[in-house]
Image (cartoon, rainbow, N blue to C red; front, side, top):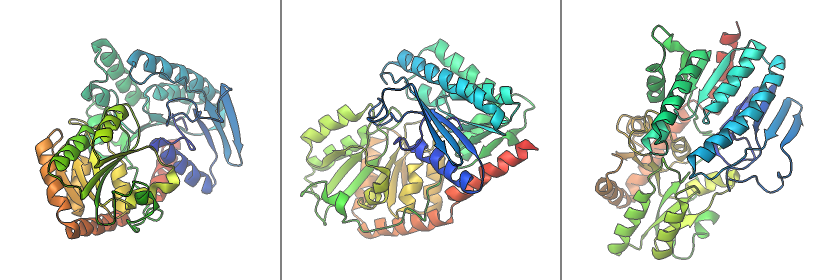
Length: 410
């Protein structure tokens, strides 16, 4: 398993990868994990992990090898690309050495460069490579404007298609992402090599609970039991239009609506702008990352959750937080592409509403209507919970991967 993050790193994909590993090893399989030292939260190697290029963690089921991520400033694309290349070289060389002990290579993207490292390991061990695409790159980077250099974009696109050709299978999170990837396969390629396996939440672990909990109390005395809490919990990156939350908070403040409070829970490149808005708006609260064990408490504290994704990203990304919100029994207002996985999921479950990305007026109008109907929010939450209970969870996803590995090894 080649991945950029792994527990105790706080990146959501790190938790997904660790969950898969736990379930595979519980079924008697051996796993070699090659990843980075924890660095996601502060974009720097975490305390207690510094001072060494690599750390080896022996486990009864295999081992975890954590390499230095060589972190660079998120705002400098060239520096980040060099960082990913350096980490990929270290992890790839390690994977090539480990390939002789393995039957399958499982490489996660982004960064897309880990696909190349996985291919090198698969070539060395004459093994099938499963390319696990969590976000389609470079599509997401192009849509958000992070990747603007034409030559770099063309090179990334060539690498993307080259990896799809060489992977034995490509796994994605939604049918929209699958259609995106299949459209890039060579003529005559088997579209069945693209397999949909979502990152569904564990409905057995995340359950509906009391909204008036310790986390909600920590928001301050202004957020009393009668207040409506609207929450965005997740990454504050280029893909998430968190300015929608700020604009909505401003409008509610101008209307004198002190009964509605907005909470932004997370970190990322947009944190400074949200922090500046929170300093001047009494109804906007910015909270940093919370440990994974508080996830259920955080989700339960809100009456309505926001899922935000910029226009054009519906076919290249799936905000997996939507599954956690549904499992927690809370309603969702999503600003996402029409017809995307989130849009279809909410419409099918009756668990929330969707507005078009960038439509500030539509977003604020839908928000006002939803918070004016507490009973409706609770009913949406109940429907969302029922939907989550009916979806394939992490156990089923782990088994789907194992079934795929078995087919590829024949």
